[in-house]
Length: 365
Image 1 (tube, rainbow, N blue to C red):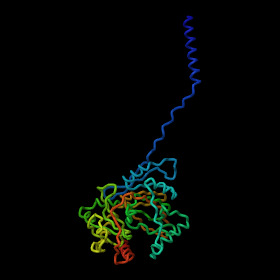
Image 2: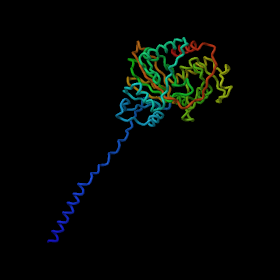
Image 3: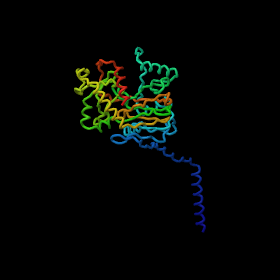
Image 4: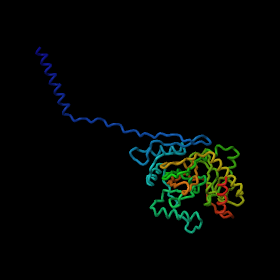
């Protein structure tokens, strides 16, 4: 009995000693919780039809004006835009600087063209100078944000009323364009979107061959093939169209794809008769119209389009009858030059007269 009691006492003393050792040891903090996983926003297909299926998605439940919810990485934005061609985010309240920050997710923001020809006397140039003076007086930074409006004192008017891709008057297309609707008109003011590559693919073999045989000349003197290859996918051909810049109806036959000294000059014998050229442009316009998605804007809408895969044009709008419309546009620098060059060829007819005549025919159709 004594031995049992002694053993019990020893076990009790050992337990007490172990308890004292544990209580005097430093507490080990619990492991930190795992970092929260970035939840990618949900996507919803837009009701955009046309050849080769629908395109465009709405990005849901993402507020670009707050940092409390982290934005997806630039790689996600770029991949999603390339896959769907058009992204829509509703209900956004972006300052110009916030829009520039959002634009950087897709690449380097382009500087807006602010220098105008002070010696030009055309009505369009005069209106542009008045608009820029009004924006400067309001303290609006025009370096990277283009303010578009149906009121010349609030922003640029007569912008993009024909099918085009941003940057098509330069040696490379803008990689992406971002619009933020600041003020929606009471009626109208939609932007229409279509896919030049899908429209080309939907045409028959004869039509595609006829398009491939043509070049167009922009009002700036830039000459480009009517059909170009998507610089990110050599197997995909697209219509390179800027109906605003080719309003003179100047088109030429192609002799080769080479940019030799002889081919860099647009010769008179290569020029397509103007009536025939206008017929080509009208046919292209009708195909784009038939395949278009017209987006009815609401204030706060942000739209991003893939500049290599989606063309667009604005619907005419008048502030006096439709209500004020104000839109901020930023663009991303293109990284892929396309096959084109400048020419010193000049048409015998005055540019503005030809453009005016084409505008009248375009509006009448």
